Image 1: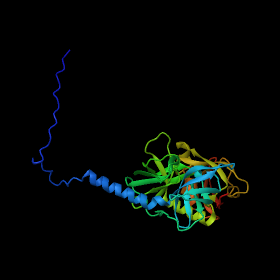
Image 2: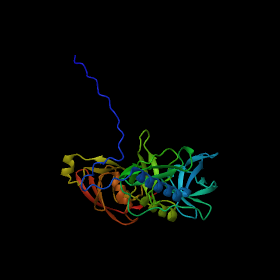
Image 3: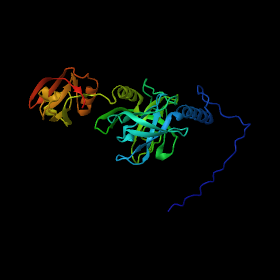
Image 4: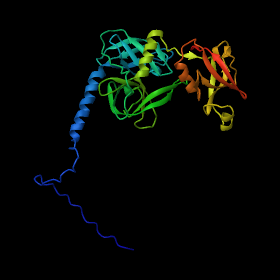
Length: 342
């Protein structure tokens, strides 16, 4: 067996401050000091927290059968006259809530409306002149940009965590089965109780409402984008709920084999299979039958139930639309007029 030689000891030599250092390669920029970067980062986060923190509140709601109030989650004031945005699941069907502000005040609030399909809800505090944050409904954030989450995780009020926007365009399934589109994925740590709190950019603008975490995962949080939140708030203020078009049917996504897709000239490899038709609804009036395959709506190919929901979200109530249906080995061109959802 070969004998291992003795490894020479490492010796640390202090640099001579007077010694000439090697020149930087031609064209290289001057190095940025880490301390300066950290100071700028800290100043940005502190400024965001000072601007938005007072608008973040904790919510407590009653148990479903009544009883004492209990901690439930977070919310953010979006107007000085007491409108507060939070998650639908935070309210858990309660009409009343109690809101605790950062200045120590505890105020009653009533629900204006909620939308389980996007996990957003709006409540109103009975007060005026309150601090509030701006919802940034302009362009989407950019992956890599600073993201600051403020909330009340596990009952610890006014907790701040930071990260970056990881990705855009994620999808989450809402409580009613609809797909929540364009969800923001970020790395700011979240815990139970953070739900409903704002995700804020470096300019103190709300770019999302935190909604979900993946259990046992690290650095993966999700927020409903500000553009969606703005649209939902407008709907809730106007109607108390979000109005969506409805076809009066129950469907599921069904893959179509290559041979069948080619024979039927289908534009997509999946369709919506009709499982049930609601009596008296638009689908029944359009002569849609259980077992039909829906291939397109209003000239737009639908490769599943989520695509059909997206198409319906953009269609006005009562306006006739083309419905491309496969029944057996035949293609049928039907006409259907969606109505406001039940």
